[in-house]
Length: 241
Image 1 (tube, rainbow, N blue to C red):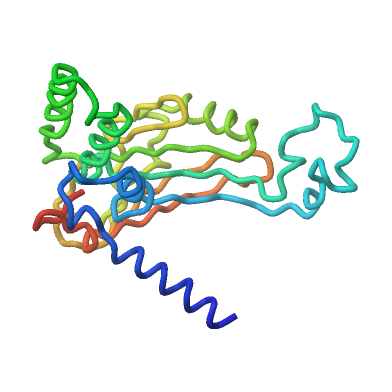
Image 2: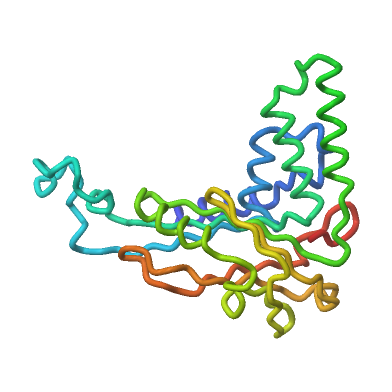
């Protein structure tokens, strides 16, 4: 067992050591490498909220307790571990925006596009990458759930929020200070928040996004804290966020 754990830890360390954004130009990033940067990198973190309910274990449709259950039974009855996931991305960071741009190329089969369409896409990408975020930090949060009704409830919550209603519950924590959102926009399964780019961020001290997850089924209302470390965000010789 110890040997197995050692191998897992070693593989994890090797994965972390492989930072394609440091070794390859954006045009060479593969779909797998783009996915890594957008989901598990210094600029992207995922938080899973879950509560194991003993009354739900063994209630799946194939279990003795679950056989013969009505198809209209709540979806959470068939989940041993109902879960809500939040994926947080620093969208003001250049490497994250480059990953978004590269994904758009890959999704559009860029290499096989006719020249005029490729040129049009290049123009949009260049405009997107040329944006500057000298005064603000932009954070995008996507959410999902393995229980459809939970996702609907969480979506209803976030779609109802505004920059005024999230005051006091959504912050960027920097050097012991809480920065309120300047803007808040909500879409389908996603919301985007803008914060003042504090001078304290230049100190390389860790910072975090803090927000409140609503009560959803068996998952309690709770504070979500997502930590970032600028020391890990070196990109093209500078700290990018």
